[in-house]
Length: 198
Picture 1 (cartoon, one colour):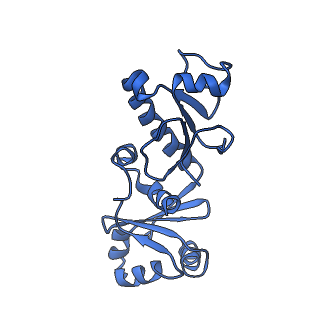
Picture 2: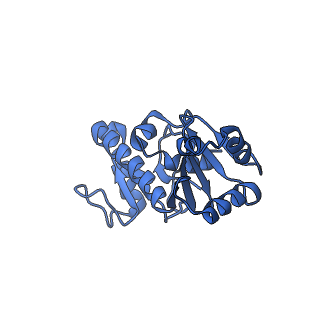
Picture 3: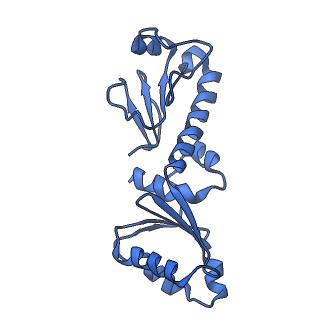
């Protein structure tokens, strides 16, 4: 799985989160796709559907100039494409915030069962205070500070998080500077990005 597709004749520097190819046949059309190069886009689409004024070709496909054709547009469009790809990925998942102070016991019990016996989860612990758990098509967020208030030992929580071959990580260093800028404070997508990167 990838965040998006980039179709280009030229090598594109990226971080493993985007599928890079030089033709349209290999791409997943359900995720955002960016074609790089005006002349290249005209060759791929045989001039149909294309307008130099409108960079959107269809629902999930757009084009931009190469760096040599128009560098400013290329950089602006690539940044927009990354942001759009992140939003598209976020929308594929249901986000559920679990408040340890107010949540029903049954909900917490189900979560613990999934972490312990279900499929392996990808877990991002942000600044040692907030946990984001990605499994299946759900991302769960939980504030560890609320568990401190309930006097639940964090060592016990970490022990549960590390069970069942769960992938637990504390850093977002694997993300490019551009992706970090686009994520800003919305860290819930990070476990999914880690999953598709690995």
